[in-house]
Image 1 (cartoon, rainbow, N blue to C red):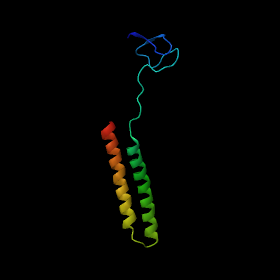
Image 2 (cartoon, rainbow, N blue to C red):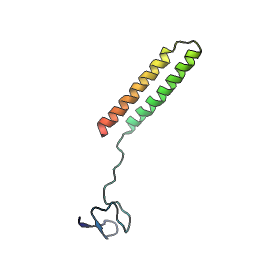
Image 3 (cartoon, one colour):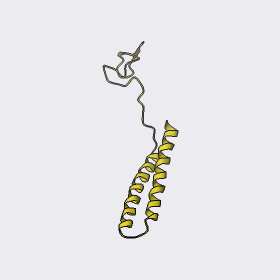
Length: 93
């Protein structure tokens, strides 16, 4: 463990310290979430679409309409949701 100089306040800080005790500047780089907006949008659309499709298929079954169109929509949205989960994991670990 070595002492390094804080770039903000010029105090000596251990290189193992998470932040400077004098000014609070982070010494260790901060991990920023890397999941892109594209994957978050697919996750949101897939989840909400799945819920809407399942609710509509329930309403269709009570009203004696065919339930396969909203149920198929729900399954497609579920597939989109699962794809987004796997794609975000594959790209960002």
